[in-house]
Length: 144
Image (cartoon, rainbow, N blue to C red; front, side, top):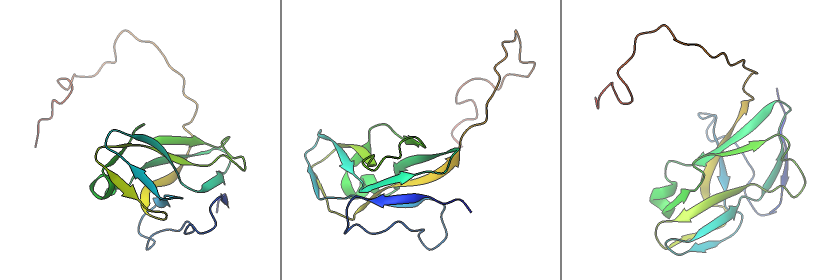
C-alpha cells in the first residue's frame, strides 16, 4: 500500500479520511473562515501540504454540493498537484470565484481529491488517415 505523508498547517482542521469507505475521493476543508462578495476571487487555503508517492499526482475538484452550498466555482476547473509540490509550506489551495455573496467556515468541506498514477510515456505518430468511420462530429449522439 502506498503511503502519503501529510503536514497539517492548521492544527484544528479535521484530519483527512475516506468517507464511509464508499468513495475513492477524499474531502478537503477550508482552513480558515472566508467571506467573499459576488465576483470576488480568492485562493482558499486547505490547511495541508503533502508528499505524494513517486509517480503519482493529485486531482482536485469541487464537491458536488460546493456550488449549491457556497456559490463558488473552482476557477481552474480541476487542480493538478504533482509530486514535486511537496515542501513544508507547499499548502494546497482551492482557487475560487464567488458567484454570490458567501461565507465559508473553517472545516467546511469545499473540494475533494484523488491520487492518480502519471500517464505512461506515449509516442505520437503523424498519419494521413486513421482508417475508421466518422461518427458524425461533436455531439453526434444526440441529447438522449
